Image (cartoon, rainbow over all chains, first blue to last red; front, side, top):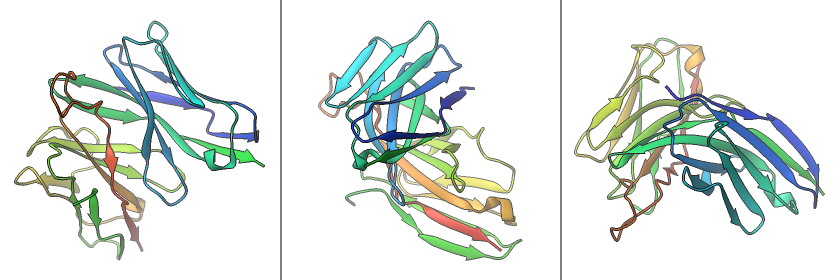
Length: 114
Length: 122
């Protein structure tokens, strides 16, 4: 089955700096890579995703890159703000036949220091 | 309902007792997932349903864990003879059936999570 590794487990940055979280996956058939943000005491929510036919996607201050050959993908947050503090989960999914199994990484706790 | 609903939100039980956790997905969502999140840990896959069938049960930790879904809607996760290591937050998520984008309800496959059921086994 799919195995997703995520690094680092914790990350502290100064407000305004950039943050990068990296993930690798094992199943070359995976074709969908979402990122979820979980604020303290709340449920995970999708913040951005990318498909295997795209190398990069950007949405305001967040961007995701995908390297299919190396089987790794990354989340980039620029101009970090205190409200970006949360746990971020990467995931890999094989979407086939209308359904998918989503395997998550172990999470990165991001702390943005004002 | 407006979102994924889980009950109970908190459950404290004694070791050896059975517990049932319930998940009511968003109306119309055909896929339903169960994950476990231990304190400070990631999201551990348990099982997922396509309609009423469960094509992948590989994440269930032991035969003490079982899940069912009836009517393509509500799902119940049952843990028999609970152990202290079962203590965690059990998260349920649902999603629309993923499509290629040509149908009006096309979607990326986003998972919508419930608030979770926090289980504490004493």
